[in-house]
Amino acid sequence: MVEARGKRLKSLVLFGSSVYSPCSARDVDLIVVIDRFSGTPEKTSLELEITRALRRLSPQKPFDVIVFDESSFRENVEPGALLSGLVAGYEIIHDELG
Image (cartoon, rainbow, N blue to C red):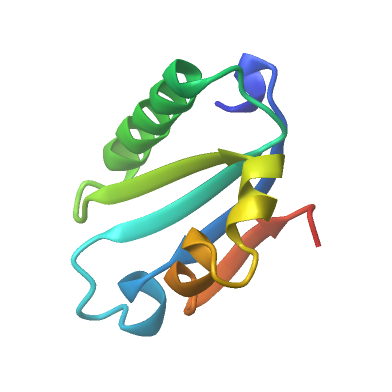
C-alpha cells in the first residue's frame, strides 16, 4: 500500500497497550515510518488508508495509525520529545532505521 504510492516503508512499530497488556488492549497502536511524504494532507490520507485496510483484515479491534516520515520520526524519538515516552513499551515489526 505504501509502496504503491511510491513510498518506502522504513519502520513499523507496535506500541501501547497492545504490547504491554495484549489481553486487555482495547485497540492496536501502530507507527508507520516511510521515507518521505509531501505534507499533512498526504500524511492524513496515508493514515486513513492504512487504518481502513487493517480494519478490513482484522475488525475485532480498532487501529490507531500514526505515519511519520523518516526525519520527523527521528526528531520525535529524541529524549524528551513526543515519542520518547509514548513508545516506552513497543515491539518493532519492521526496521530499516536501526
